[in-house]
Image (cartoon, rainbow, N blue to C red):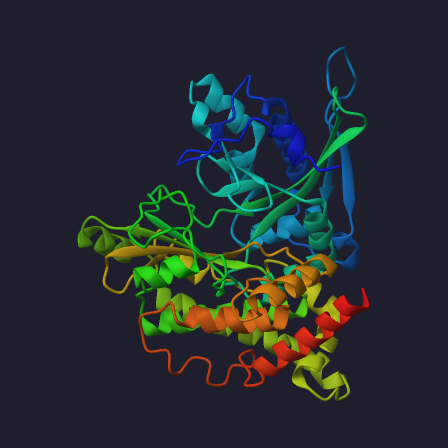
Length: 473
């Protein structure tokens, strides 16, 4: 049963403010959101006193169940809150410098109720997704976090890849992929429907965690089919609506950053794309937000009070060396498996040595380097502040997506459509990302292990196997 259809029935308008509202007493989802927050508070309190510990395999499978109303009373719903992998998510939050108190201050029920008592109804903003998923987002007042409803398929997929996801964040502290800080499910009985409503949701970092206005935002995949928001290049589009790949090309916009920063971003995108290729994930996007300064003095002030971004980047390579050195004994103990990719898969199969991590063992950068300048990256000309992240990272290229790929390929060809096999998707994604930067990228990707010269052959091989599958069906 899909929860979204039951809890957000009134949001059906269009326009610049479409789908936006604030959670308040009397709102149709007030009771639901309040109990979500009560469950989150219980989850955090159960692990908040664990400062240094090692994650074991069982932690990825753990599930805790809480009854949020102790006893059923007349006209009172009984909410059941389920919390998944709480110790893992506690460590992820710790890795990114989020204390339990700060987390609860942002997303706990006390903040919501306290703001309402003080007359501030804007403490939690609800907004519907403009995508096909129909998901709904709740933004915290400080803009740090989002509570997002997800489908049952996405929920189970995240559980399935949780160990790989965690290890990637440990190895790559500057990863651009969505940072999930909690995975939950809530159930309650609906008076108008038979059975219980099940709602799956995640707590995640907000890419645009800033009080500054985002004047332009882009959702970029590297594809062309259907990837235009504006009907004409000079059409007005509200700043809350994401523009797409062809809009970016039409605007002749470029990301203007120092070459070292551009190189680090591209390298991190390659590392992240490699994870998606290995996990058979496609359809992810680069979310880019641009704040334009009114004067260069603003940029000068931000640069003056911010840490040195180049030092952050340098530290990231030191950290990767630490991880690499820690893996050497395991690498030496393994037999030769032929290709490097196969060897990496074998190493990742031996989870235990990588999963054992505590904050006391490795000094991580305090924040990702692309959040150095007031949550973003200053442009090299001092005119803009960029906010960046990779989103929509839970789409498995399973039978449904394979069929979509087959049908759209027959209609449009496989060069321009968004839904293509993960390996080819990752190569195209990185290739397009390199075109976004207004700097010399000649040194980037010369030795890239992801942008191989046989990418076209790989796509052709994928086509033949999937078309053969379609013929059999």
